[in-house]
Length: 171
Image (cartoon, rainbow, N blue to C red; front, side):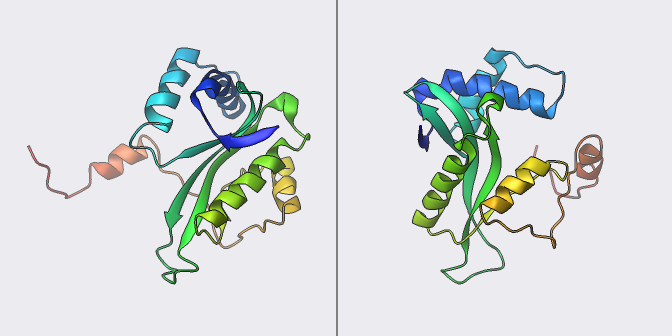
């Protein structure tokens, strides 16, 4: 097994993995491969994306798991040795490949990539109900940040709040 940034020959296998991820988060729901492929190529890997997709694979085309990461800067840590960090948006391993070292291999690659790019930490969210994931992360040496909570603003609240903006709109 190898871990690298995703390459075009891996896109089709990653599309299937992203579809599995969608079903994982939206039980009973499915999305067409064409929609996911377009999202992958035009959005996730598009020119405006800050994401880097890291894949664990065998051979050139078979993807076992992936991580979506971005490098960012801290607003509260201005010192050169503390200001850069890596944000892990997602870590997902194909259900048939779990508990085989895929997740650890990906996280090890991400840690090396982060360190090589001047990052002093990796931050990520995890569902509170994901006991196996929490145990896995703690097994890597990660510590739960109990001072932070995760919030989400979605529709219809997003539109309602946006409508209250006094920002001048060009026309």
